[in-house]
Length: 308
Image (cartoon, rainbow, N blue to C red):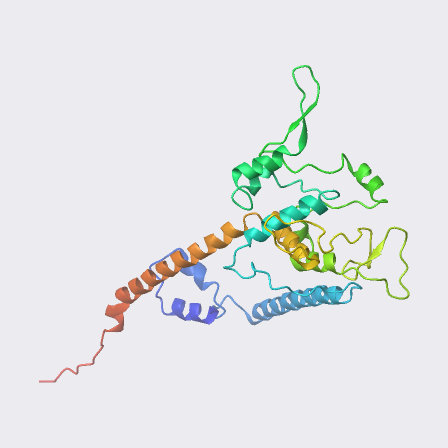
């Protein structure tokens, strides 16, 4: 590429651009300003930077591979791929699993009830869901705090008033907020599904403290959260059989949506952008062919001058 720029500059094709041409020519390795030592130094710098990047990538992969936890299998999610959307029926069922099972310990502090509208619930259904919870509000005109039914603008309330209360209720363990849990864990929804379905008896040599359980997908294997998903642990409003794997799949899909509520819109915008840029590329290609047709079809012939 640099050599091609040098040939263009040498042919003086850019000489009419008095300001741009000298700057472009300086980028060419064929220019006289580029000495052998400078070329060698820049080549060494590029190779060194590439080597450091490859080393860091290899170290990151080796650290992940050397961990004591098991690596979750990749599941065939319906939203895999650039042009696939989330399963909104699964999002609704996942919300029901969260409401019936997970809500007792985990919060969704970055999700508001209005986010459910036209995603998993209608506006009336979302208002009904919000009205089921009591939100602490105030102060009123007299300076007192009061409780009121929730509104669409309210965020999902935390099951505990503060972190200390949460730890006291869970033997010192703090249940994490689930709003961004899929984006914050390596493996995403695959990790969530594997964790919820991967409980087993501790192997020989693994010592668990009181209140801990063994899960090979959790770092260290010892997890304070007990297994919560069993067959019929929750009830679906649409009649879907509530097996443990179905519950885990739906709640993982719901938490994926919580981490990226704009996922469907972003992928729809990707499809629109590809269509628009493809159309513009066709126009630009046709325009280029049209403008260069006179140059491409031009014929240069030598005609000898006869001597009289």
